[in-house]
Image (tube, rainbow, N blue to C red; front, side):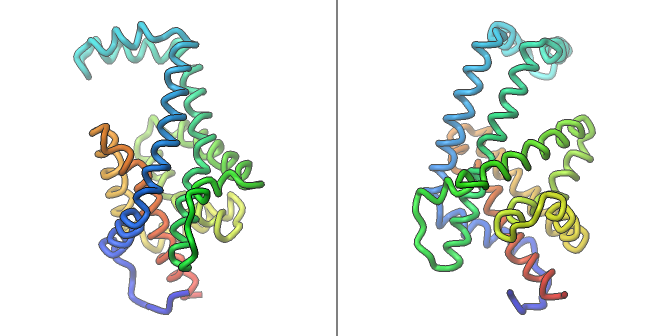
Length: 240
């Protein structure tokens, strides 16, 4: 536990996150290749099975964000095929969620000067971890989907639960206990958490929208979460 009484800064946290990301770049790429190959397979399989490929093709020919485009998207979203595809992709995301814990284990092993291997990326799938974290993410996703129409509440849910995964993984906290502790951190470090999560989201999605950069930036969010968790919870427990 650190004894530095100085409040952590967003700049220092992001600097540390970039350090974790840079030093584990090959594992970041491995994460992205596994994640994207499984997720995109689910996308193409779902489109083929639900038969909405023609509708998606028609929408792609419309001017984005035009009235016709918006109406077509809204009409498609109400179809049973699209709803089945949405459920399939959500369940695929739930299945893939434990990959995030593998990266956090790698970061922790680096801090402890332990040997890191590619097998560590699957740490979230070992034993009970798979059921614990897929169960957590299913619960998290259902709540998020209910709040999605209200952008502010959805974002608040993200930042209020940002530390749940490392708290459950490293400290064996239960779901609601981890939410309580994560909320406590948000009350103590609101500016730092908001700035760091915003920066992480910008970097992550900038890479995704550039397509080729996705394999490098997709998992960057995990490095930021771990860097925040490491310094903020050291500070919280130091105060107690």
